[in-house]
Each structure stands twice: as C-alpha cells, then as structure tokens.
Image (cartoon, rainbow, N blue to C red):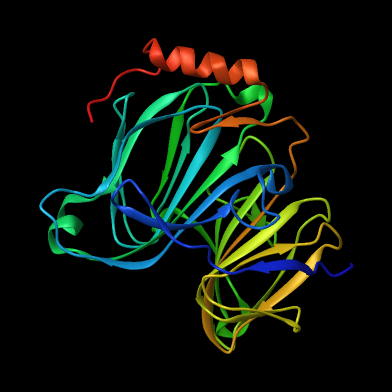
Length: 292
C-alpha cells in the first residue's frame, strides 16, 4: 500500500477563551487550509493546551448555548468538566474520559469546570471536536454517549510500545466504543519511550493528528512537535508514528461528507434556509429551556 504523507503541519494559533473556563487554540476552521470543507466531517477543533486555573468559588466555563446539526466530542486529558442540558441530562468528564454528544435536531447545553476541581484549581487540558452529521440525520433526536476511560476499547502495541484507545471506528480489526452516523475513526495513541505504531485509512478519508504530549516522527521523515496539528494528503493509505521519549497523539480520519455546508455560530446545516429555521426554532423555545 502507498504511504500517506503529511500535507502540512500547523503551529498553535494564538489562544482565546471560550467563555471564561476554556483557553483554546482553534485549528479547525481557523487554521491555514483547515476550513470546514477541507476537513469535513471534522468541522471544528478547539485544543485546550495545558493551562493552570487558580482556585475559584464559582465554576468557570461556558454559559447556556444551543447546537444543531452536528456532534460535539469532548476529551479530557487533564482536569474535570461538568455539563447539563435542556433535556435534563448531566454528567462529569474526568481525565481520560470522553463525552460524545449528538446535538442533531437541537439542544441547549452548558459546560463548566467540575465543582471540586474549581475549588482546588489545577491544570486543564482538553479537546473539543465537532463532527458533522449527514443531512439525513441532522434532525434526529439528540443523545449522549458518555465514555469513561475504562469503557474505551484499547489495543496494546507490541514490545510494550504503548496503547491505542479506540474512541470510534476501528484499529487492527478492533472496534471502537462510540457509534457514529458515518465512518469516523478517532483514536488516542499513547506511546511509551521508543514506541511506534502504524495506521491505515483509505486515501480519500480526511486524516489529521494533534500532538498533545512529546514529539513524534511520521513516516521516519516528518517531525511534529507538541501542540502542533498535522493534516495528511488525500493520497496513500498507510503511515507510521514513532517517538523517542513517549507521546500522546489524537488521530482522526473519516469519510468525507460530499454535501454542502451552511454554518452560522452553533448551527451547521446544509442550506441557508435551514440555518434561518434553526434560529427561528431556537427563539421559539423548540430547543427547550435551561437556566444560565
């Protein structure tokens, strides 16, 4: 099989705050040549690199906001996040956990630092990824997949090389833990010292990786430093990742949705009329109600 090589490596953009609780670098759609159409179905990627929050009596976070037309995937690497929504769902995401929320037809949502984490303060590191929904599923019923780390499928690499956490999709024939509406692979690669792993995704899939810890070498030629985001060419199938001193890498690869994208703020649909309808439904209270 042909090698899948890196097209470009993006340095961390200037950070900004989402609400007052999440300091993030936006790679999709803000990064160079990383627009929604190029990366679809990955339509937004915020990376909260390590940041130390002081103790606070009031949990910091993001106030009530709506979503429609896509899914949000929140991965906690450091710290602890809590949430609740207009459908009465609530929960917490600890280190290593994943929350996969299907907003679909519409939901009001609030995310914030978990109460005890807020009181003590500490280091926060997280990723939020938006995954677009195919048109036929955009108005389906909202749902959650809450994946504690011990529920996430894991593949042990040879020679004590580390593990691959299979959040969604599959790796070496082993299925991931989350269900998806289109083919999506989302993997946490945790390499030990001198560890390496190989991957294979169809050439036409949009494929990228984010280095959260350590420094990696891809295909023996391309170095990707920590906190950097690499986009692969849509050519070839296979690539290899190795590290000298250990690394944590989020790897994403998915079948492109060949559908038009109409996006405005928290709504991602296929036409402008659908966006206007989303605003109208939101203002009429059809997403439910949630106190700020």
